[in-house]
Amino acid sequence: MGNGHNHRSLLWLLLLASPPQQATCLQQLLSEQVGNQYSRLTSTKWRVRLDVGLQPGTWMPRRYPGWAESGARLVVDADIEFTDDLLPRTVPGEPLVGPRDQTGVLRVNHLGKDSGTTRRGRDRDSDQKPYNPSTFVSEKGTQTVRFTDGGWCIKRPTADVKNAEGGRVQPGGILGFWLDCESGATRRDVEILPKTRIFFTTGVWDDPAGLQALEDEYRVALSDLEEIEDRTRETRRDEGPSKNLLERFREFRTMFQDADAYDKLRLRKEELERRSPPRSSAVAKNGVKMAPNGSLVIKGGDPNRPDWLPTAEYLIFGTFSTKALS
Image (tube, rainbow, N blue to C red; front, side, top):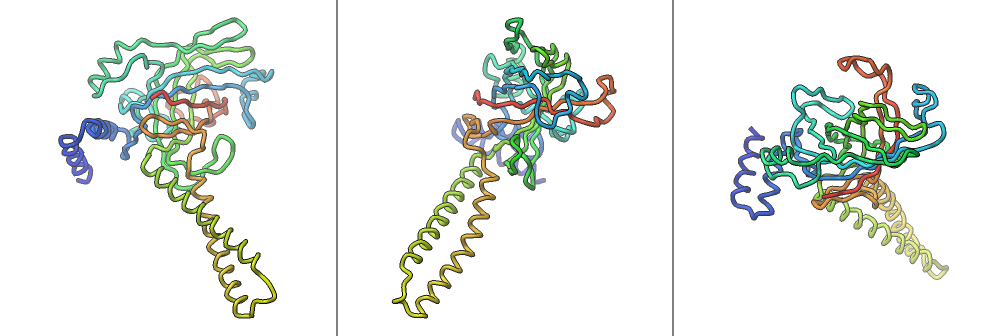
């Protein structure tokens, strides 16, 4: 009932709105197929730079003796688009990324031209888009890497989580996605085996209006903290034997009240900092922000393990950085 009402409201807005607002309403109607909460991440395009190699705490050398023991890195780019298409029923989901019925299709290296406005238009365009394979330079020269489409989902954290640097943060969403490296790739002793599924995890802030409100509140908290600090310095500077007991008591009470307010503001400021994106975050044209880097993992265990069996472990595979393309 609620969803039907929301859809009718969006349809009325679609009829009455200006062209830019119509595009936003249409995108929202389409993207509501991916989970229950609309995300402005849909239809945005990004470049991810995979940096594959040894990471602290990884078990890769235990599972693959000699892997990356020289300290070499394999760096390769891929261009991706977060579509509003749900995974086909024939494609299994990935619990690490999110619920299957909320997982959208991630297109890889098909960004030669803009997608159509509607799904039908996009499907028609996708057949005409050339596939642009990724490349990197190894000791053998320029190597070509073929990635295939994957899936994506956003989880909404209710508590702090650790970011790629080990700090505690609470982003607007935890973005998980995967793509498959069909061709494999090798640089010295760093190898991506053919048909390896690579999982990406990073923070995303896909509510620009909410993010602006967060930034406004942070500026107010910072200003209030500075005001208390200035008032405290002024009070201490004016202290002297000429003041009577009542004046000193009033100043002491004010400082005590300020100290209590200061502690509350400081805690609020720290909370807002944990919820805010890093200053170096990548920013899409529609205001969506993605953390500047994230983590890569692959499935561990027996490579011949049937797909329907649960995965026992994931191995840290490297890191990645992001750049907005649209």
